[in-house]
Image (cartoon, rainbow, N blue to C red; front, side):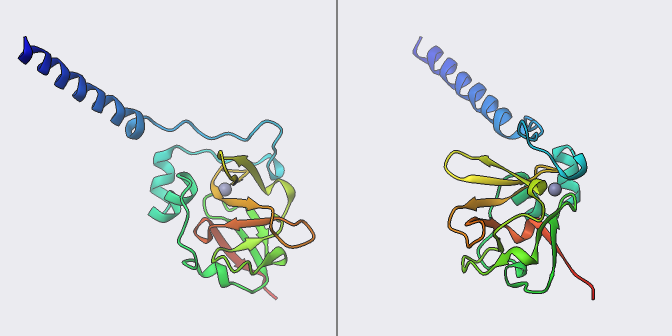
Length: 170
Ligand SMILES: [Zn+2]
């Protein structure tokens, strides 16, 4: 009897572990959607499967934009990029920020006080912070805080890995 219940316990433990594994790692993530009322520039949308994103992005680009990761401070050269130009989404090339609203926040992350157009990004609460996502492909870009400079008082704290910079040609 004692051996029997040990067997049942072990079997349940293994079944539970398999279920948990499937739940956390093997279940395809549902696609993220624009929140109700949000729009994107020209209504453009790019939706790809997790496998497609994985195949076209580098490991760090994928971890940050599709799994809400955060790069190490001062790890991106875009933090200290001061040339005039535009910052676009690394996943879908949606223009996100202009160098005109970039400021030195001394945090180690590229920081802006406003997006290039109001609907270039959208915000979503992740429970304790306000997350910023690309409105075209839902890429996680960073967070927004209320301690930015005038005129908005906002600080868009972005991951450099999530963006590509294009200098304005003169
Ligand atoms: Zn995007």
